[in-house]
Amino acid sequence: MKVNKLKVEVFVPLSSCVCNFAPLMEKVGHVTSKYKDLVEVQTKSTKSSEALRYGIKDMCVVINGEIVLRSDFDEKELEDAILQNRQTS
Image (cartoon, rainbow, N blue to C red; front, side, top):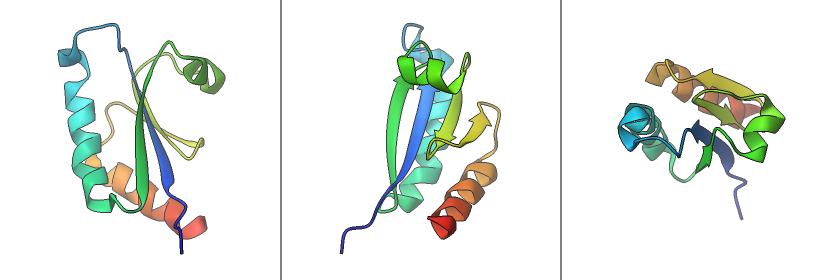
């Protein structure tokens, strides 16, 4: 049975130095690694068409096209959002 994975999109300024968004990627990686069978993580530019569609101008995380966490979220917020969204899927 194939499980539909939760889509976690991480929006970062890909044109800037990686040092600007490494802490965000580290947080996302730390949390999503616990749920690697449940989530699919994609890194996207804050200047992409998807970012424009979501109205994103700064670094953030979008979960299944809905939940937006600003870059200053703590790991528990992301974990809670993943678990909450998995229950409602």
